[in-house]
Image (cartoon, rainbow, N blue to C red; front, side, top):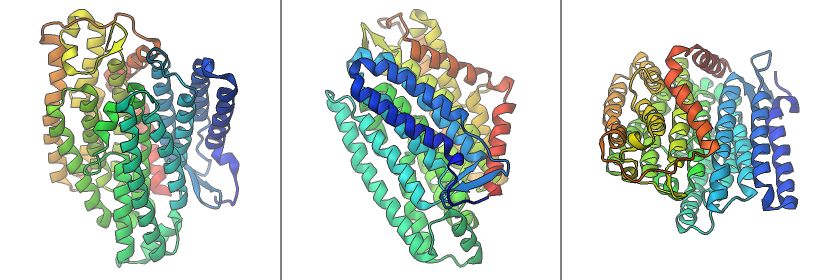
Length: 482
């Protein structure tokens, strides 16, 4: 079903846009004393937006002259993005107040970033893709530097902005090449025209795919376009870092999969080698560069680069099983990553944050529950069975093997073994090193809730994996059905 204007299909986007404007007005007239209220309203708006996600009876529908698509794939990705954004806002409520930069812009920018993500994953046109991506990116640039009295945060925001502007230029140049040689920016028309080429892909389209892939690789922080990630993760406030590592990454991976499988699905052998290279580079850099890190936020930055590499292993297969693996992996990644950052937010002494790995020494003896929760997240990220991270990697590696990408699967397993070193080092520091000065005993409500939920999902996923796997399977099927 295609219509020129069907706003009912864009209910989450329209609702979030109205909610963001409403929150902006409340903040402007209510002042800084309304920050906590605005944060809870933003969380409520994101939960409602997630509930507004519906799959059309036809399975797939487009609106706004075919520029926006609504299907099971978009609904799955949007729901995860909205929930991850809500969790990041929840973790930042008390932290921002304690650190003295609780501003009304924080929840408002989060809502607008979520709106951009929603437009991204539902994009059915290169123009819509760019609009959603830039709306998200502009919000993220400000969030990175929202702590204006911090030199590190200001530097993080500036680096992110400069390199982000470069990636936007690459995206526009690639889109212009594709339009110039294919004569359209619509994904459906592009897919049909690629099939009609019968193997003779125009050289301009090939170069366009390369530029678009490079730009999207920057957004997912895939190597070698990862250079901004460690500095931004370290410099930004910790709740913002947790947000960067979760929701935008999910949206960018979902967008990358839609672009490659949708309009360029018939050219899988052209773009597959690009994705394979990005996957290998990301897994290698994420595994080896993290070994020397002493700051836990920088370690998590390289960890996120490695995890993007594992997700790209699934995408490289170019089939439905691979996309299913990507969706399952990213859903699990969100849970264990948010749990890890919630634990990092609990690393404070006398009300001041500490970030070095050595500060975790002996945590199992001073705060055993916190150590156990962080240990679960680390074991899961390392892929130790029966935790959720093991099953996420299993799905993407099996997809690669079924597609004949044996070498890629072997490299992924070896990279996972290497990465286990620095994850298990954190566990060793917590359980076997001499205790350091204990952290503050009181856990803030937001991080405690996210830590408990993320740890429970990570630990108990193997008991009942069917809901997530079946939902991801339906989402992947809807992407290929389009």
